[in-house]
Image 1 (tube, one colour):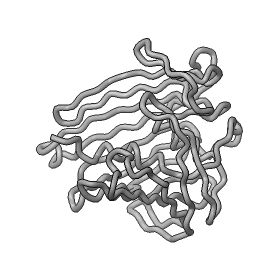
Image 2 (cartoon, helix red, strand yellow):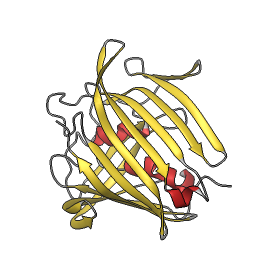
Image 3 (tube, helix red, strand yellow):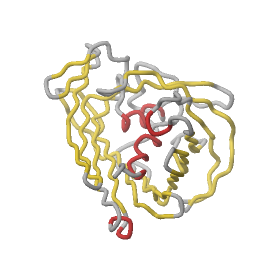
Length: 249
């Protein structure tokens, strides 16, 4: 069986908007420990599960002050009878370089399982996993989870074409994103003024090839929280809606 679209929220959430820079102001971040975002994830008309993203706390990693970021994906009770999903992703994000220091994943999706840890050396521009070293990694390289927070440190303006650095063991590239408009969006968590953004995905980019388009609405305020994400893929429509949120302290 193919892996089903609950996992797509990982890819969808990173498709926000940013001009890449080499540092974020650590004292003026739009997120902080205690922030929690809860999304419902639907596949067509079916409630597939929940996605929970958290900024947990400040930690020290190899002497570097990082934010511990987590994302959990769990299929709903009804959907689990058809396809069970229990995923956890953890990223240590360094706001000084605005990139990842360490990324860990644990995935259970039906019969598919995967676990792994990736180490990012931002100074040497390398990625290491299980002894394999990848060189010439893009500056401020981010995993898919940290990329979401990277982009929230940036300014957004309608009409701009922006970008962010995405790097893991399979990809090492700059993703271009267009900011199309401001719109009012209503989701279970409330009504928000948002920027509507669309990434420029290559025709051969994984699940989105041939028919793919991702649209994301992110709040037009200092927090830049995604409230709605839609994706059209070769196997159907995926939608994530913000159900509840708590801002950090």
